[in-house]
Image (cartoon, rainbow, N blue to C red):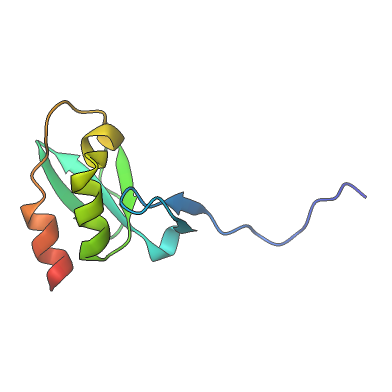
Length: 89
């Protein structure tokens, strides 16, 4: 036997806020478009994406740690007001 299983693995991603690993379906994909963090609910927006738990606590941690500009490989801060508003709804 080769040791392989026939069950499909659930893809995991790491939350940029709390740094915990979770299933891709449990996290929200975020994309930076012209300096603004935009949620990508369908996962189809172009560009580099980062994953975040859909909770304001994780967003606050990511902003405080400056994890979003690092994840998107952009210089300077990003505008997260629209993202925070959508998470609080």
